[in-house]
Amino acid sequence: MPRKPRIMTTPARSRLMASVRQSGTSMELAVRKMISDLGFDYETNAKDLPGSPDLVNREAKWAILVHGCFWHAHEGCDRWKIPRSNQAFWRRKFSDNRRRDKLKIDNLEKLKYSVFIIWGCQLEDEKRLKETIQSFLQPYKSPNNQKTPESGKGISEEYNYSKEGKFVFRTVSLANGKRVSTGILRRTTDLCEDARSAFYYAFLRKRRRFPQPKSSDCVRGVDLFCSCGGLSLGAMEAARAIGKRFIPIAAVDNDPVAIKVYEQNFPGSKTYTLDISKALDGSFGSEPTVNEQDFLRDVKDVRITLAGPPCQGYSSLNNHTRLKDDRNALYERVARFVELVRPEHVLIENVATVIHGREGAVQKSIKEIRELGYTVDSDIVNLASIGVPQKRKRHVVVASASKSLSVHGVIAKYRVENESSVRWAIGDLEDETPKSGLFAPSRLSEENMKRVKYLHENDIYVLPNWLRPRCHRNGNTYPDMYGRMRLNEPAQTVTCGFQSPGQGRFVHPTRPRTLAPHEAARLQFFPDFFDFSSVESKESLSRLIGNATPWQLSYVFCLELLAS
Image 1 (cartoon, one colour):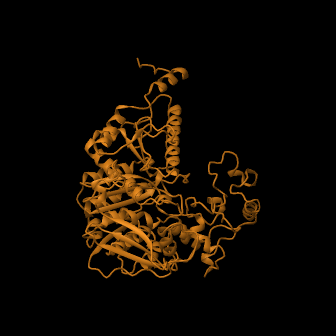
Image 2 (image 1 turned 60 degrees about the horizontal axis):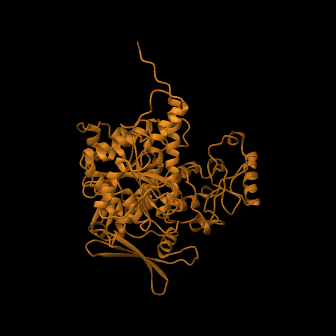
Image 3 (image 1 turned 120 degrees about the vertical axis):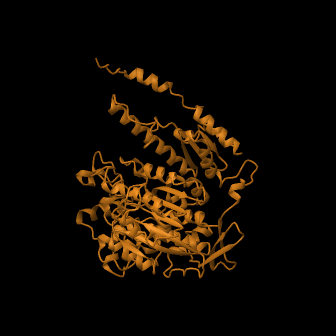
């Protein structure tokens, strides 16, 4: 006779939850020992900080959270699964736990802390975990105020004004003592609080691209799912910053409009307009297929592979498939490419929710790339922390056959003191006359114009409920819809719907309209010299800009990977 499941009363369940140890767990003790062995000071359970982080260093501004895989719902981990009984309760419980964890991290990052999560399952391989922690802590000072030996090696950058103040320079110093400087004519403005901000303020407004260095030292790169080339632009700029040339030997996308824009901006690149799943049609671990051999015939000696697999299936705004989408399997094609080509370095980016895909494509791909002998790390990055004028969170995977990088360690190293604002990025464009109607702000319906004017006339940023369409009133889970942008903060995430007030917080902060494409491109960190002139429809232009990756993301990781 089948055994009846035990029904736990609410008081009994509460007593069980309360009995779960909150601090001083065996996992925490093991992590504390690792960090002490590495020579770093910390305090534990800082109750005055958001979320009472398990380990924290206030001076260095880092915090570590040690998460049990079950209670914190570690997606893709064998230690977490929803119990069979009372699933509605457990789904709600795990959802609440995830929401609280996200809030803790967001609040710590607002205080300029770099946050690192350690999962219980990582302790199964203590050697690898210790290496990962060491990589994360590399940029920080040790207790005696000296850099740890590992962080003294490698690459560093600094920004300075010329003596007369007319130019601003970025200087990159390499481990071999070589220094490479890039100068740019400074623009007069009171919006830049430091030389770094002034450099990129002028960079974004530059109408002519920098020439590539005349160097025989070349970086051969491949950009899978390249779109218009945001990741490649960052790799090219990183290579140029260290005196090398970036050569895109293969850029792949199934969108011919995107490929044409890529070719305009990366002259001489080898491009492929095709479905990557048809070119890479073999399973991981199998012999190369005929299609794979044909595609990869000329793809050799790859230094770095960049990849931004389609993110629409993973987006939290996708109400149709909710994390289950045929496009999600394309992520796994990156691991297959790495298996066949063996590039030295790999950088993959996607939306933050990619780790919750029901197919487990991310976890599977990371596992496969590790099996190939690469050191792999992954985490979620808020691009505002590295100077992008946008609160855009992306999931990043970095893999290397020759280096060990921590995603959080790299972000901590290049973290800016002052986030870039909407005013900093587009303040000079509010009354710009576009060269063509394609680049003009969209025409709003009479009803939407009333909503936009109401926001400006009342100097508010959130549209009242009674002015929203019925479908966006009570119970609305997207409060940013029909919102007005805040001038002195980074923008919300720019999407391909930036020309519609009903698609997000895209009402211009000072003018009664939505964002123009030029403004959206700036918020996506595209400099003015980036050429979109081949695009022939507003829909295509919005898609390319909204789905792009700000190049600063690949820039900071490629600096670390390509420096030698």
